[in-house]
Amino acid sequence: MVEFINSLHFFNAILILIAGTVTGVWGLILFFMKKQTIIRPWRIALIFTAVVGFLQALFGVILLLLGQQPGTGTGLFYLHFVYGAIVALAIPVGVTYTTGGKNPRRDMLLFSIISLVLVAAAVRALMTGPH
Image 1: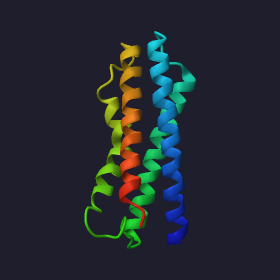
Image 2: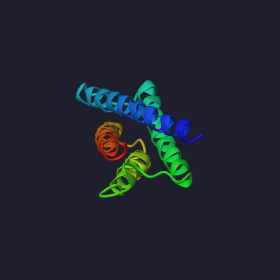
Image 3: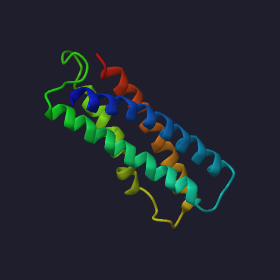
């Protein structure tokens, strides 16, 4: 069971890297093309990125409850939890800073940057996680 959840946790991290990068770069392209509305496919990609970030945290908590620790369980292993929290909460927290549709270009830029920060946090979490 632990190995299965651990595998899900690892492969979902790869999915986060891909989804976050695609969402962030795509959003920046839309922003610089001066799109005045958030297009539906990009919004779906953003929601997908948030969902896989949440799933990643869920898998991590399950592993923690099963007695697993990131890395060797020594040194700076606790940073894995910090980066994991950033991955899980980046987009939901970012919603509080948006205009709620009043300024879609600003929202698009904000979410694009947040997606790329999420990718950076995921990379750092991968660096502190595996044995």
